[in-house]
Length: 309
Ligand SMILES: NC(=[NH2+])NCCC[C@H](N)C(=O)O
Ligand SMILES: [Mn+2]
Ligand SMILES: [Mn+2]
Image (cartoon, rainbow, N blue to C red; front, side, top):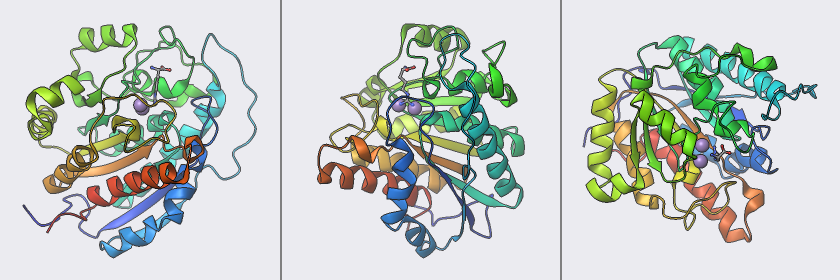
């Protein structure tokens, strides 16, 4: 195993972007994710790994927004405002050669984080690790929750974005995203993935080929350029990560989950990471909180070189 090197961050600067946001779905508590992960000592742990850490809070004083209910989607203006702020903070970090580590918050925030990476690195590949594809369109969404839609916005699948969501640039090409961990897709999502020929490794593929082969195939598909990882903790089996809004049984083991980011770290090509959908309020006991927060923090540490020798 190669010792940790980050091709895009020779100075090892890291922007810790706190995104305590819950407007992309209906369950409160997911906005507490960043706070819990910080209380666990994550910032310090990352410093111990040799990173120079600066904290950013783009969602401070987010105004109560006036929602225009357009079609089925909820909180379009709020999600638009929050994601644009996250976008600006992340792009600024990237322009200062800092690795953006964004702690969610629900997965709608990836409209901001991914757009920033593609603004800086137009050739970047995106690894989306999730039980869900989050590729619902405004037409297709059943729930109206925007955390189920960020990929459709990034790909430009919605002709008219409602309200403040219109800022999202469609810079992602379907050949530049790979999914790992899928097991709960809505029927229209399956159709889109097939039609656009998007590379998707479901839990079936993880069982069939093993996690090692799956990540190799994913990396090969994305090519040799920079890679961003948007990690929804519900990709991991609820046995390890119970405190999340939309848990689905039959997920990654904790080791498989960590292995994915360890391998990404080893490539030296990782440019940004999101850790989203940690909802400490949904735990039924303290052990559930601890397990979930520990898993979220471990993902970040492993992606940042902890387990490389
Ligand atoms: N980021 C997530 N946890 N997304 C879950 C999405 C669930 C469902 N497909 C929906 O659109 O509502
Ligand atoms: Mn999910
Ligand atoms: Mn997700």
